[in-house]
Length: 441
Image (tube, one colour):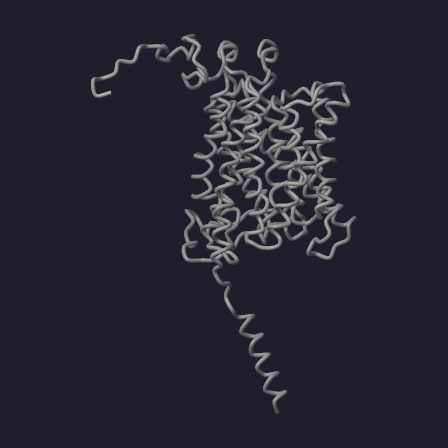
């Protein structure tokens, strides 16, 4: 009789467990809020990284293309982007309109965290993705054209791709594609889009190219450090809980980044150069990119291989840069496109668990399908959007504005005081007009 009662209690307990709703975890919630803030910090970090790599005459414009994404993409994500990406009731290609304006999320849970926190965390990803693309077109793209491009690209390229890969309804998700934190969704899409946009825009002027050396290497190192720091939120935060998976993602992220930085410096030395600060920063970023899709699926030792192989491939692509027609100014495709592709393939090859029971070769095949799909959507979408914007308002600044530098031409500001009034456009108020302070000032 006791055995019957015990069995009945066990079965009733299992039934209650199956019917139980997810419970809010204060620890998980706190971690994802912090992770969201870390991912947000990555975009200003990228602004410093890119800003240090360009001419001093275009530092503000370059940094502003990252900062403007914080405004434009945030509002689009809240109003429509989140819903089209994650709302239930959609199909394999796009989400529904059930959560427009984040409607229906208040009081709801996404796993063990508030749905509103999940929406905030995911909203930081398209911001940094749009900002990444800007590195390919610095020193020559109209600021207004970039703002419009950012809005259209986020809605027409990022949102569908994120739905395909991360939504339970998405076709790549159902196929079993592995992308833990954005190697496909963020980096491959940004790298390919940057290359296509640079091709449509055309190369910089010869005089601009000759003057385009990193004007502030400490900015580059500061930006890389902020990216490295913020990336822990990017990757470990994608576990959506404070647990073992987050711990593994945190560790592999750090390991792969360290390995990639060292490999990049060794390759510089092997080519007869000195180990450079810009090289160290670039190698670190490549490692961060490559481990992103794999961080929760590979061992710490495998993370060394992911970072090292990605650094070698990206380094080789940078050496081949002159053979391409597109003037990808800050090597967005080499670092993010190639790094993302290598990381996605190695995710399938080195993953110790996929959660799907698929074999290594089968998983690599699925990863290749996801890579091709991401590249195709990014390339076609970017080309169409760029051509439409070019017809509406033009993409490129004038030769005179490019020579002067885009800080004065686009923003009527200088990153560094020079006393040069400059040229800010034919309809602009002359710069350098004395400012008369009132007695209250």
